[in-house]
Amino acid sequence: VSTWNAVPAGPPDAILGVTEAFKADKDPRKINLGVGAYRDGQGKPYILPSVKKLEPPFREISNANVLSQAEEIVQASTPDKEYLPITGLPEFTKNAALLAYGADSAVIKQGAVSITQSISGTGALRIGGEFIARHYPHSKVIYLPVPTWGNHIPLFRDSGLEVRGYRYFNKETVGLDFEGLKTDLKAAPEHAIVLLHACAHNPTGIDPTQQQWAEISDIVKERKLFPFFDMAYQGFASGSTTKDAFAVRHFVAEGHQIALAQSFAKNMGLYGERVGAFSLTTADPAEKARVDSQLKIVIRPLYSNPPLHGARIANAILSNGELYSQWESEVKGMADRIISMREKLYNYLQKDLATPGEWGHIKSQIGMFSFTGLTTPQTKALAEKAHVYMTADGRISMAGLNDSNIEHFAQSVDAAVR
Ligand code: PMP
Image (cartoon, rainbow, N blue to C red; front, side):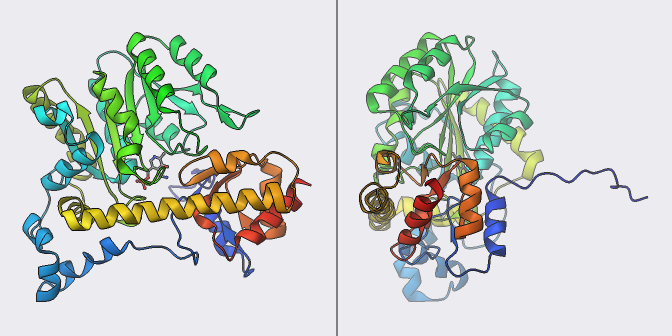
């Protein structure tokens, strides 16, 4: 008998499993709206031109033209393959913190942000979960929005935290259940941890307004909750990295200490490079230094130190004024294309096809995803009859739609709900 004879088959991943089903489908009309990866107007993966510019220097160090173009990068990083420090490329983490907190943030000026590079957003969340499980003195309970990104649940559970939910989505209005959210956070035990999607909530595409964020901040303060922000889409929601950082910056300005997970997968299109950061705001530089030392103790036995390449690219963009402006306009370009697809899809369903139901939420939702309101049986029918793939909760990645496939998608949705 084999040693692994008793290992049971696990279920496929709820999101990545959709891609597997999509790949197996041979129909030319097939559409994958499962995974949250940006696609251009031709449905192709998109390498940002600002990123592409930076790729050659790491391979062809002798090319003078490219080198002069990317002067800043070469200065900021050494083009060797040595190990990074445990907490990653220092210039990168410094610039990642500036992007999130803003240059005029008091905690940044004080040198009180403890930050480490991470294996993208997932790794940042996991480092945060591990650190909190070990060092947060008050509670092991973390509240996640219902629904949330599916991976949050096992991630925090595996970190040793007890996962609970707070209401977020109102099925009737296909909008934010703000009353439910407030009630649940007010009822949470003091000092519980609360996970907040900083912008472009996944999977619903529904964000609190700035006014609502201010109210949430007040409740978090009253209840002495600990806010943990997941910011996987800075720039992707509104097209502005500053606007999308509102919640994080508001909480910090209000005097909250926060935990923050950042990802550069979406906003720089660096998915497979796995570049992200985890940070904690602390009281002062001395406390920061102690927290830094403990972050290293968490990370070292996990993976020793993070990968180089993505951090160099991200840092080159963040540290070079010209490239930074180019990148900002490219992020806006992606956000705008998604917004235009929302507009088109809404027009098809609500106007042209007069599809039963109310489709205004397609336009009001924000970021990569739309929660369509399609039921699990309808999503199954869409896959089987129309070769359209999405997660079973009816979430679609808006980025998977383009001028060539949106009509087929709208007609298939129309047929599925009739
Ligand atoms: N948080 C949320 C809410 C996400 O949607 C994602 C990506 N799907 C992540 C974190 C992490 O992604 P990554 O590890 O690729 O940065």
